[in-house]
Amino acid sequence: MSPAQAIVVGGGLAGIAAAVAVAKAGLETVHLAPKGPTDRRTSALMLPSVEYLRSAELVGDPAEIGQPLTQIRIIDATSRLIRAPETLFDSEEAGLPAFGWNFPNVKLLESFEAARAGLANLRTLELAVTGLERVADGWRVDLSDGTSITAPLLIGSDGKKSLVRVAAGFRARENGFTESALVCDLELTRPLGGASVEFHYPRGPFTLVPAGGRKANLVWIDDREVLKAAQAEGLEGLRRIFVEKSQHLFGDIKLLTPAHMFLLSSLSVDEAGHDGVVLAGEAAHAFPPIGAQGLNLGLRDVADLSAALADADLSSPGWAVKASEDYSRRRAADLGRTGAMVDTLFRSLLTDLLPAQAMRAGGLWALKLSPQLRTQAFSVGMGVR
Image 1 (cartoon, one colour):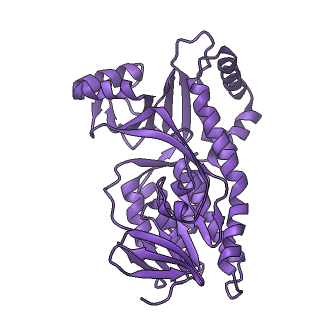
Image 2: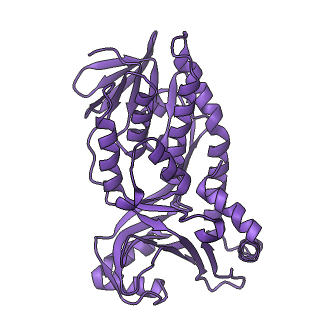
Image 3: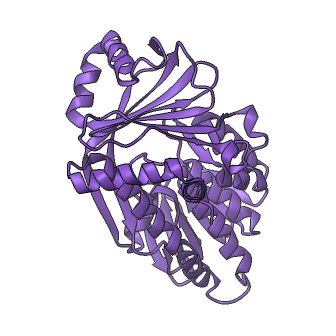
């Protein structure tokens, strides 16, 4: 196999985006991307992420494959003593056509793969990694076909159970939750329009995200046993539960896809790059699906990787180590801030402590009444830096 300057491990959306970014930086790149199951989920990408995708030529017109998100509506559906007000965030108030776009992951994958296919210095191999070792000239990666490949720069975007992260000695902190997420696609009698609607219940949100026309994507977070019991009710039982959980605001509901349940956990690393290795996407961070931060944060990883490589002197000795350390510095503040924000939001929804409930309700009242605070919240939520 001909020499490589960079190896990208991981065939998900963040992995493909990273492979494209590294190749566009001028490096001879090998992308190790074994085929996985079809991802029927959707991704709500905020405007900065969409702008990055367009500038990186990973997508064209977002309207061709996605649904604009123009409003975020939060409804306190608890029966707690201290309840938050219903709050509506409108993109027009921020002078924006939309906060972001809701994309089917299948469509994003097709668009990303088309961008990858057009790069002559990017080779894609549908092979799994069986081993990793630090060698004199970089990192040797052993492959499932018995061959190996070596490169100075190694990018791990291989998910929560990242082999790259473990082999390269990154310290990770993981936390599992008793809550899980149930997801499926629905058809509503009354459409959402461009509004993402979050009903906040004591054990997590019940969120409906617009998917075009009368379609909606559901993300329901609750105790694992509650979700298992709901699944056991069958299609008719789930329909009744969904109508009740949505407070009958959107009429009758039809399930368009089976309901799947995902375990929730969080993961963070002390540093996102060292010794010629870079972590991106869920190899570096994972959160409960609160605030639509998952892939948005992964794409910010890729944007900072592009910036670090643009500033690197690729002809100097040790350039890959320096680039990985530069990348880690660039990512530190964003990863820390976003991790703390998502953790605080998630735990504030679950707590039974009255002081915490009062703080959350007071915060939403402040956002409801103060345009200046709402503008700041827009920026934080969209990942504006």
